[in-house]
Length: 331
Ligand code: DAH
Picture 1 (cartoon, rainbow, N blue to C red):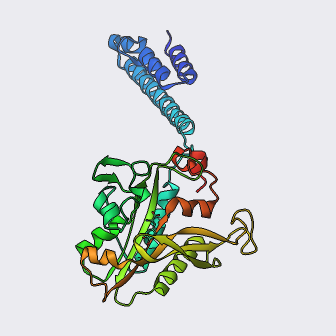
Picture 2: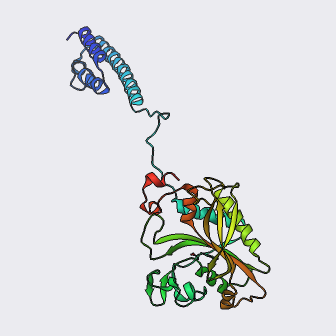
Picture 3: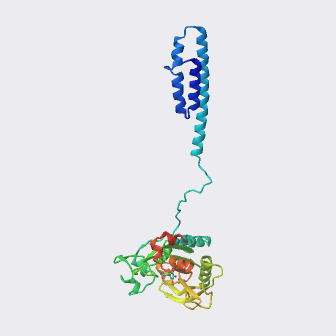
């Protein structure tokens, strides 16, 4: 091929190349070891032709390099565009879990009492009948002692029916003053229905010191009720009976629906029962070796599920155990 024709052909091929791979092929074709130009250069006999062919080689090299650089840039641009991540696009949402409602309430109650200077302690779920019943002043033959109501592991071991045995264990392990709360599961032989589950949670509180009065109990419970249900709620206390308190009182909170006059939710009384409490029976002090002449104390034990029901209007306690995220996700 004439040098001019060769140059034209090479420049045309370089211009037509559309990728780095193609331009490499053009380079091999026109400048490679077996290319026409290289073969011609090897055969050169005179200086003039040699210089002309070398000049042609240089021009072709420059043209091919330039085209290659152009194509590389274009490919990089294309990759940058194709692979660009738009950080302003909304991502794929990740479903986040959160604490179960009962765990939330548990932590809330713990925080309230930590704020009042109480200590949060652990209790045990497997208890002896001595701590679950005897020490708490349950008389022989009390219905709760029956295997029909309580889950026995053996004759002397039960799944605790309430958190109150922690009161005894705490008093046995320390001298007054005592200001503790303990929260955890309790077990009863109940058939599940809308208002019963065989396992539920209680918060137990015990305060023992010199000069503790029923007024201290009511003040503490009023504070707790307002912290849980809102400042505008009122509290009241009515007599009740528990083996381990004397006197025993049931705490009531003003109805959140009617706030007084009565409605179906509060069974037309204006008040809703929250849980049991009272002044520690001196028999418990004698059991643990506290001086009942010197010390008095109050205690209460409330259900966390009851707090959840009253606060969120959960119609069926079993829902809290079904773990359906559509329900639990609302809290
Ligand atoms: N243990 C009682 C129950 O499970 C609740 C209770 C009532 C606990 C009075 C107390 C208390 O500490 O003083 O029904």
